[in-house]
Structure formats: structure tokens, C-alpha cells
Amino acid sequence: MLLDLPERPRRNRRFAKLRDMVRETRLHASDFVWPLFFHDLAEDLPIESMPGISRLGEKSLLGACERALKIGIPAVALFPCLDASLKDVEGSGATDEENLLFRTLRKVKARFPELVVVTDVALDPFTSHGHDGLLSACESTVDNDRTVDALCRMAVLEARFGADVVAPSDMMDGRVGAIRRALDAAGFTDTGILSYAAKYASAFYGPFRDAVGSKIGRDAICKSMYQMDPANCREALREVRLDAAEGADMVMVKPAGPYLDVIRMVKNASDIPVAAYQVSGEYAMIHAAARQGWLDYERARDESLIAIKRAGADVILSYFAPEVAAR
Image: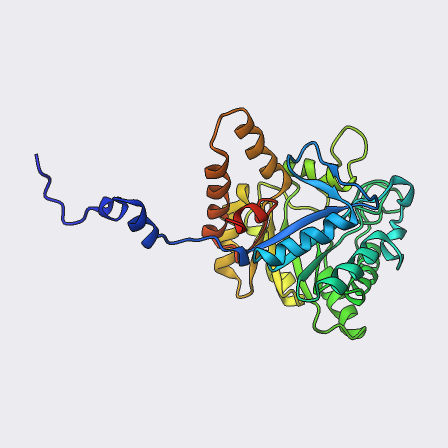
């Protein structure tokens, strides 16, 4: 029986070139920021929970930055991993002008001035307790205002040593406005702020905490007192609105894949660029399932990224970035 159908959507799916012609969402190298982990050792150290990812020595880190430019990735995000002996309760190393982050930042910008360098503004790589901020007197919570003061000093130093964009990931209230004022007062009016505006207290961060050495002991640190409740969606819009009003140049949703609805809501409500971070747990799950033969690695990787962009992300931070950009 021949159906009387005025519309047959399958016509546009008949063969590959036709499907490509009508494809609505495409990934480009320029969509990505490549997160890079590095340490103060010459050799690279593979991160067991993130297959294919290592804490890089200086030579390899500079090589990765060079590769990023060659394959069209415009930006890298730098994440240092410090020796435990350099950490303390106050995270004082975060504002030491000779710390690993600042030394590395100077070298990267001197070698690759055209590369956009994004630096994290948070204390967790520097604190002995692994929290993103300074603890209160009773050590039961993070002291918001005291932490913001430290973050401002850290952000100004990052700008001084070459960061093009500083990215506060701490989720303290008021930190974007305070950092903007501090940057402007120090003469860094051109330094951008990418705010982790909607950062959830997610179970998907585990491998990242291994990578930067902020996991203390066997159990995950509870950051629910300052990161967002995964059950909340409207709250993300409130956080985005506040950060945009305080001077954020871009806002981020983190994680990405489990929060596609949040990305779409933020995109619809925002008139500034929206970033999304495909976090370490998302990356690790795809690798783990593919190694078991339970899914096609490349197809799952690409589908996960397409979904993030389709949801509304203008910028995607992903460990898959060099693989996809180099195709």
C-alpha cells in the first residue's frame, strides 16, 4: 500500500552527503577550550581515571599548546597539580608569585602570545583540605567573604602573568563583581571573566580531583554548601543573572552532559556567551564503556559533544577537544 503522505522527512536522510547538507549542528575546532593538567616534574604522569590524559611536564605542556594552535583550538585552560608539601589550610600558595601556575603561565604566553589562556580562580589546588575556599573559624563551612578577598588577589596575579581570561570556579557569592573591580583597579580592564555561574555539586568530578590532587583521603569532599544542588534548575538562572550583572563576560554550566536542560535555559535567558564543561566523569564513562565494547567510542564521543552544542553552548571545555579538532 502506498501511503498518501505530503511530507516524508526520510527523504533528507537517504544518503550521507544529503544528511550532511541538512545537518543543523556542527562541531568546529573553534568551539573548544582544551583543559590541560600539569605538574612540576619533567616527565608526564598518566592519570589512571582519565585514559589518555596525563599531568604534563613543561616540555609536553608547551607541546600541547603548540598543537592546539596547529589544529585550530583557540584556547587552553590550565590546571596545576602541586606537591602536597606546598599546600596549607589557607591556600597561601595561590598568591605566591613564584608558584607553579604563574611560572607556567609566563612561559606559555611568552611562547604562544596568540593562544587564549584561561586560568582557574579557586583555591582547591592549593589548600590542604581540598576545598575551593578558606574555612570558617569552626572549619564547618567555607568563609565566603574571606575567600573572595583571596580570589581577587589570585585573579590579579593571573592577569599580570598573562591570563587572557580568568575563570572563578569557586561558587562564592559576589566574587565576580569583586574580581572585576580588582582587575580594573590593577589596570587589567581587558582581562575577561568566564564565570562558573552554574557549577553543580556533582558526582562526576572525581577523576578531575585525582588529576589536580585535591581529593583528600578515600571519600569525596562534600562541597554542597557552596556548589549547586543537582535537583535545581531555576536557581541556575539566578546565579547567571547575578554574575552577568557583576561583570562576567561569559558564563558556564558545569557539568555539561547531565545538565543539557540547564544549558538551554541559560542560553535562552542570557545575552552573553555560554560555556559548558564536559567534565572528567563524563569523559571517563565514555572511555570505560568503549573499552568494554559496550558502545562505539567515536560515535559516543561525538554525539555527546553535539548534544552539548545543540543545547546551546557557544564554548565547550572538553578533554576530547584535540581528537575532534584534528579530524
